[in-house]
Length: 425
Image 1 (cartoon, rainbow, N blue to C red):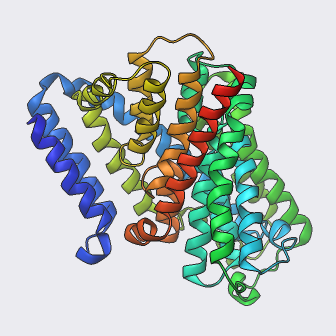
Image 2: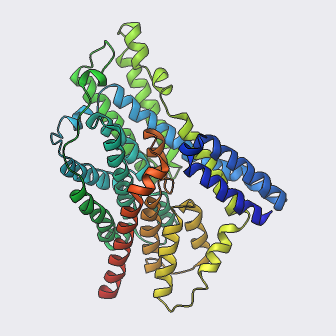
Image 3: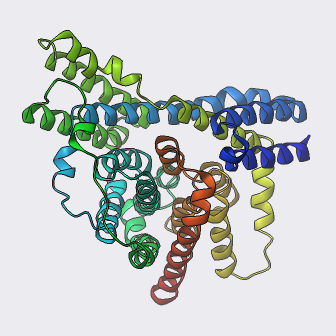
C-alpha cells in the first residue's frame, strides 16, 4: 500500500497536468485523488483515520480563507472599486505594464499574503487586458511576484508564518536577509520577459465591464474599495492581536462588508439590489477551484500522515556534504520539491527534523526556497492554484512558457542568498 500510494499520486498528478488533452476536469481528478489516497492510507495505516479530521480542519481553514478573499474581491469588482487603480495605470505597452503589475504584486504580497494578493491582482488584470493569452502571461508573472513578495515577509506566506510563529527567526531579521534574494528571483524573469514581450495590450471595452443598468457613484466606488482593501489588510492585524486563525479575520471582514453593502443599497430598485447583493456575488465564486484545492491538499496530507514526506526529508539529510553546503543543497531541493508537493508539509517536516537556533541561516533560506520554489509549477503554490482556477490557465502552457523563467529566478535568488552569506557571515 505504501508504494501504491506513490503510484496513485503520480498518476493523479499526471492527469491534472494533462487536463485538456484527456478532457477530464482537474477538480474532479483532484477530488478522486484525495479520496483514493486516504482510502489507501487508512488501509496501510489504520491509525491514520484519526488524523483525517485534523487534516480536514487544516485544509478547511485555507478553503474558508480563500472563499472569503474571493468574495471580498468580487464585491469590490462588482462595485467597480478597482477602477481607482486601473484608471491610474495608463500604459498599454506590454514590457512596461508587466513591470508595473509585478512590482505592485511583489510589495502588496508582503503586506497581505501571496494568496490574497494574487486574487486581487487577477481581478485587476481583467480590467486591464482583454486578450486571453496576454492575460495568462501577466497572471503567471503575478504568481511569481506574489510568491517572491511573500517569501521575505513574516506574514507573506503560510510557510513564513509557520516559521515565524515557531520562533525560527525574528520579523526584522527575515526581512533583512531575504529581501534581496526575493527581489532577484523576480527581477531575473522580468528582465528576460522585457526582451521577449513586444507590442501593446488591448483593454476590455467599458461596456463589457459594466453590463448592468445601475451606475456606481464615485463615492460608493471609493467606499467599497477602501472597505474591501481594509478588510484584507486587517487579516494579519487580526491574527497578531487575537492569535486566532487568519480565516476568521477574513470571514469577519466579509461580514462587515456584507452589512455595509446591505445598507448602501437598501433604497435602490430591486433589480439593482439583487445584482449588487452579496447573495448574488457568492454565486460567482469559482467553486471548482475551491474543490480542486480540497482534493490536492488532502492527497498531500495523506502522504504526510503515512510517512512518505518524512522519509523524503530524512533521505535528504544523508547528502554527503559538509556544512553549510549540505544544508544549502537540502534547502534548494526542498524548494524545488515544493512545486510538486505542497510546501507546508515539507516545511513542517523540516521543522521537525532540525533543531537549529533562532535566526540560523537554514531557517532563513528555507523561508525563501519554500516560498519561491512553488512558482516553478503552477500548482506548486496556493497563489498558483488560485490563479489557475480563476483564469483557467493550462498546466502545460505554464510549464512550457513560465516554468523555466521561474526556475531561473529561483536559482538566481538562491545563489544571491548563498553569496550574501559568504560575504557577511
